[in-house]
Image (tube, rainbow, N blue to C red; front, top):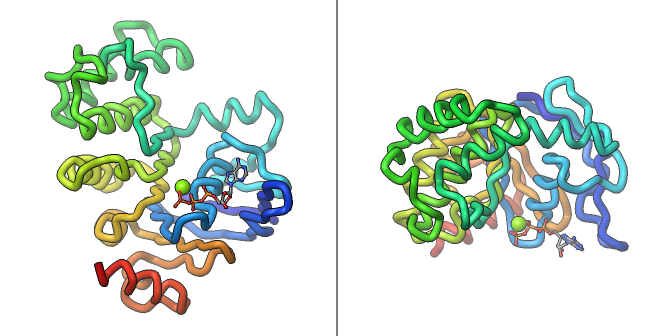
Length: 242
Ligand SMILES: Nc1ncnc2c1ncn2[C@@H]1O[C@H](COP(=O)(O)OP(=O)(O)OP(=O)(O)O)[C@@H](O)[C@H]1O
Ligand SMILES: [Mg+2]
């Protein structure tokens, strides 16, 4: 996946969070890391068409985003979102949570939607949980169902904002293993994460941003072995210390 941005700018009142970004790089699985308040979620939300940038635009491969309602709808339809908390519907079973967008947005028949869900539930060893409601599932299982729901629509890219930050380490691990498998089997993704281990082992590019902007975009190995930016160095050593 190639990502390009053209003077992409996002301001809230007089606070400039994204400042005329002109990026052009390719990745399969991209980690976005950096300190709190640096604009990671804002960047992801802009790329997902959830908020409109103040100015400028961006493209995944050759599809330049346009900010009219119907074009944004088309953009959002091609993107799988996963947020910090899973956002499953509490009154629907795991299976129904997965099939709802397929049936309503993508016009699958119920049988086709169930079949698509079944294949994914089996692939990720969740077939026994399919009839449970969210409150009957562990946090890790809920988040894995949310990921299946996002993957089921065959998105061209998955955008994940700290998908494990609400989970205990053990449950985080099961979610991260699932994401690594998806990345290894060719699912394009952008993951905002604080898990440096995950970034190291499951992504091929890393982007670092803080309040001053994007300081580094580099292939993962290079990012961790020889970061060019002093700020990245400081950030990494601070996290390694504890
Ligand atoms: N809707 C909004 N209205 C006003 N300011 C906002 C809004 N959304 C984000 N901001 C501001 O933009 C800046 C970047 O926020 P953002 O949530 O993108 O950071 P982040 O890197 O995701 O941080 P964290 O690691 O804590 O999640 C912050 O100063 C935040 O207060
Ligand atoms: Mg955030």
